[in-house]
Image (cartoon, rainbow, N blue to C red; front, side, top):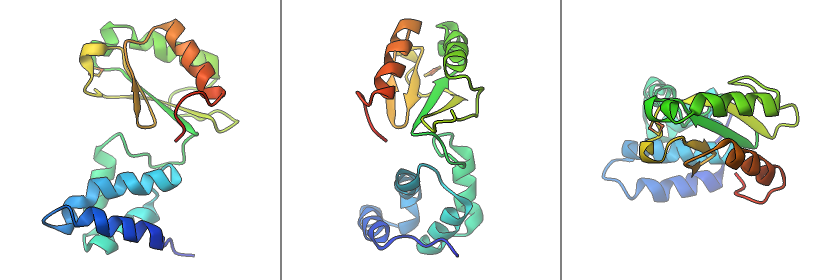
Length: 164
Ligand code: FES
């Protein structure tokens, strides 16, 4: 069955479009909304959004593939995105990635069997002054240390911080 944008999504999308002089300018906010609904942006979702905005599919796909904030595959409840660019690298990002990989038993790009965590290494998150930084879904965790990371994982496992 073909993917259809929900009526609720379309109503929200119309409101977002109204904030911009042209509907296509709302592409990124709408992709973020779409991702919020299902946790990722599927090919069918890109296609439906392109039709909704009157854009070619290739333009939507180009935006989704350019920005690392868009997931193209289903991800875990918590998407752990560790920045590995220069400031974070120098502040220990590789050690944090290795720690996460070891504690969760997954490699970069994988999701834990319980569906809770997906691990990714990403490019600069724009918070270099508080490196090392990890983004979990839409929230940033900065000045991380191994101990802070362990405590954060524990909090996430027990729903003590930020749902999707
Ligand atoms: S280098 Fe990590 S946030 Fe910029």
